Length: 260
Image (cartoon, rainbow, N blue to C red; front, side, top):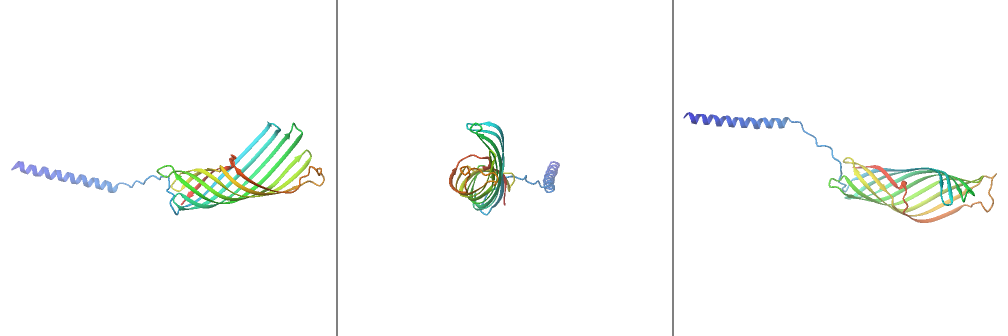
């Protein structure tokens, strides 16, 4: 009889201890603070997503005392930049269509001697470029978390460039005013890296372009120092069609994009 009573008491104590342990565990879980999930980068670019972005391109050159085959460069300084602003809409997953604007400036000064110092040239150029473009852009994900993308942008553009140029030929000053209209298509591959869920770093480069341009050129000479009739240049209108494969730092754009 005593053994039976002891067995019942032990069983009751075990059940009570187990219940208290489970109750204590539940209470701790209920009272434990909620841990927020760390913010992750990457975004799936589905239909209906919008994109706003901008890139900057720039270059600077400073050279002196360079001897070439037929030209001795005494001094060459150049400063140039180009800004692009774009917006697009994803009408299909990873494919967007949009519009863009661009603005740029180019300033250069060159002092050079031609043909063993027979002809000296002092040239100063300044120009501004304005452009508008329409494009379709493909995004190819290269990571499972949608952080890294390879992009390719095919664009149709119109550009307008204008500015003065001054050239000193010996003691004669020649002023040139030019405006140039261009239309064409170009391809800009690039890399896109998401830094947050919506904010990304964008690197792209124009590697191929086909364009047709028309340039109007007007020349002016100071009335008190006119060149001879044979050396005087007349106003002209030039047309050209180009397939451009030349590498240029102004074709490399660094910028950021916002996806929402």
